[in-house]
Image (cartoon, rainbow, N blue to C red):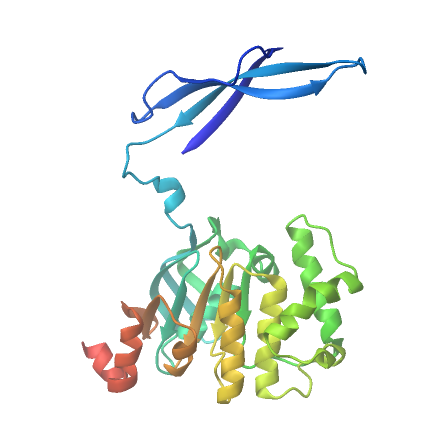
Length: 326
């Protein structure tokens, strides 16, 4: 329901506030409601006060009881992939064969599949990995053509990917890396950049959320980190960048139970109504900690089946052969 308030005059207040309606509010068209708002003003003369009233018109766009406003109730489409095909740039081998996927705000999706199914390739194509070439289809991210963006532009737009095997960056401290990445995105959004001291205040609760020791900020990015420390560092980067769509490519790979629980807890804490998560995984155990709204099975470069969390349980019990032949 939309309200529009139009002020029309300022006169001396003689009577108490009154409200009148020009039409019934149950009809599906704007209604005008005239009412008077009391307001007291001090005059220029210090020895007296005067009372005034403001005559205003409130226009109400109402609707019949029980109807929904489709514009406000419908979640925004964050990512829309239609008939996406791609090849390996060097060998020209076709790897994606018509992928279709839609992700709305606030949703968690999981793509599962065997090695060679194309699920990890799909995630890399979305972020613009140079080893792959798109040959057909469209990808829209927040209403814009994702395929025409450079990889860094996709990141600035709010797309994040956590790598299965994060790379080490010798000579660059974790603190400097995170600060530069954060400020680059803030500049893109027209927000003021943070000084190192301001950034540390911004970063501290995020370190606690991923159960990461602040001493890791002084170390070079991922250099000498264990598998669990690298994955925590990836989620820390996601928290700092506040991306709208996080692609977690086998974030559970190489993690023990404790580290997996820490990472999953941090990821769940980052999920808000305006952002979404796309998980790429082989195993159902990750989905025990991060519950997906939708589970997709990918085979031979295409999504062949979609369901809810029960589909992952069926996969764990019966294997990919039973799923693909169903």
